[in-house]
Image (tube, rainbow, N blue to C red; front, top):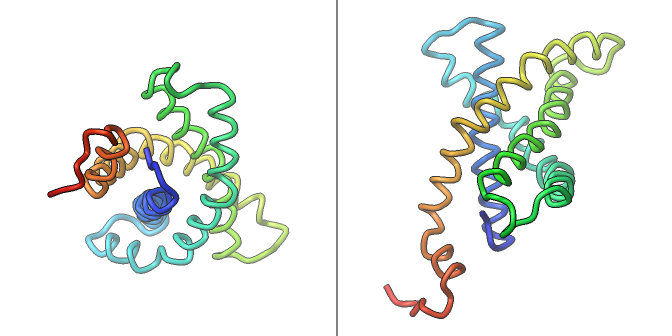
Length: 166
């Protein structure tokens, strides 16, 4: 969806914010139970993860995912929904293991128990991340992105008919 580097950065930041918030809330609820304060705790406790996720998404996941998806599918040839779903699935398949490992190390440090802590968390996090990415967060972020960049996206789609006036 993003057409420029600036739009790509904005899209990544918005997506990371919502995904990390939802994943932080999910894991907090699994560990501590669900209360009204869970929402605020997730919001205040997510920022190391969000920063790491932005860096990982930008420099690792995005290049790998684009290479994998566009090796299999071609924009303009394959259905856009198929490309969107492939991007979502591949992104989760890269980000969930890395971010689950990062959070495991962040909370428990380096030890021989890391695989024993990481793998069960990954088994819980991966399906949840995939579901929220495909059905909730992904559509919400694409909707918000289209609202925020409406003029630029219209101009990119129809540059000759865009007069540049409000």
